Length: 451
Image 1 (cartoon, rainbow, N blue to C red):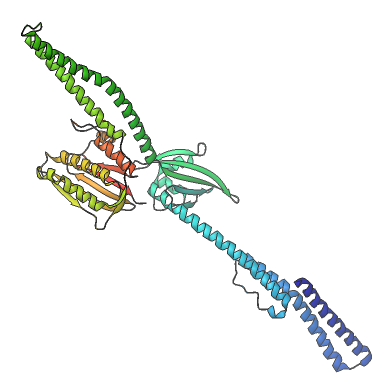
Image 2 (image 1 turned 90 degrees about the vertical axis):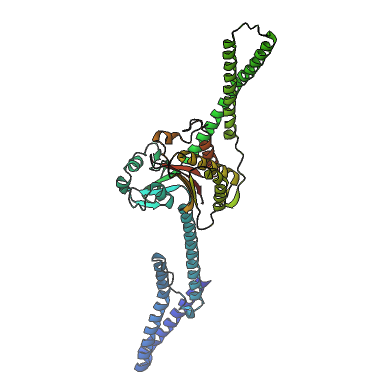
């Protein structure tokens, strides 16, 4: 409809121009009125100019419209010539609708990009994207944190900051999967994905901390082993304990009936009785030892609740104070300046704290100026409860095995306390970290992630 009206307006202008030219010719050859002829000539020139302007205005408008799209200049207006007619007004409205649609689509894409950027920056998996030239196009905070970097602009920088990682990334072309152990002992699984954007190829590396998965698998393996050992030991030791008790009872009854006429000498009878008693005692001790690991494999599901860890540690400290008052060990507690509310099972965490405090007290009880200190604070995204002693410290060999079931540095230890504490912390999504140096004591830190 608008185009038809445009053609009509052009046709009218052509008709008027034709009539004016005809009048001009008539005036020259028949009327010979020079003044009128000159005026008519100027009118013809004006009409030709106006016709070209009318036709070219659409072309100029289209050129301006495409330039606006090309240079992303959407502040350009197209309404100044609405007065020229409905045709121009309709064309201007069409231009405006197209520009509004482009702006709307661009806004949606920008919102999607911002949403994607927020997700990438806040996920726990580290992400690094590298182009063909080794330039880092994308790296999120998780990757920087895991790799201990402040920034990374080019993969070549890794040759200086982490040569081992640079070598792994360079040689991942075939398997697209690798394991990298960082300085703090954590193990990272590295996965590589290849993709293209336009004419450029990229390598996308995903870094995931698999320590939690490894700990869960290790815990499951230990629990299964403990169940099997407990079952087999109980099957073997229970009959021995029962038979020993029976033989002891039979021996006592026969001695009563013999009226002093013993087939065996008194010394042999004493040795036999003592041997049966020893077997019975050790059998019962082994049964008690095995039953202690029943707790390790049958911990209840944590009944978590929001609680201020300051209060929990303070109440636990008050609970163990009497034991310190009867010894030469000093107990100190420094709480955080602000409440540290976290979702935990207070009974299970209290059990862990009591075990760590007890171990610390026993480590320094024969030392002058013995001290056990407890500190709670928040560091980065972690709530930390640290139990520290100034004892002899833990040897590197023992440090590697300290959280393993059955392992203990004490002569009468069962090896259940720290392994049980580690399991409880894993059930809370946290962990126990050990920091020790020979001659300078040891500290066990409970780490609770807050995000």
